[in-house]
Length: 255
Image (tube, rainbow, N blue to C red; front, side, top):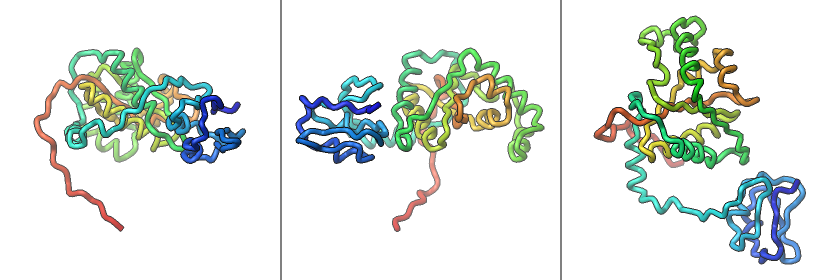
């Protein structure tokens, strides 16, 4: 099925969609834009750039939302906010509202993916959160199947019942085949969570547990071909930081 639908009555043949098509899928004929039979990656650039609203994409909700440029956010404010974020390990006993969860997931959904694969999925542990943590805690307490470097570290720690999720009300697993795509989605989601007054902890330990425990993988029902790439612990912070922390000197060079 050809996903790109062009309304010839609206099309003025300006060629903007053609010049911005990343896969040379579109072409101009008789003063109108047309789509080829194969090769579209459904990136949506043609839809976004058309000044006449002549392009739609089959199977997508084309809601005609206007673009909001990042330049509307003062760059100094944005940079200071990004520098101010901290990993949160202490949370209030307070649920995260559904509308905030929806915004966090929407931020992930709109993150870039290689080749526009859009092959990132999200698992909210919800009613399975306590069971998932119990499996991971048991794995760490036994320590027998852990990688050597983690086993040595785990022996020095107090593996409490809430060791992984810190009593937070929300845990989202970001899954996919690509580390890059899932990493970008997670970064988008964290920025959104922070803007909503929430704190985030990325639990690499729990991700390790999903690799080691078949019982845990069965519980979370991973999509076929996916791996858990990040585990986001989210909730309202029970701690408030006062200053931006220092960092080591910037490592960058121009070639």
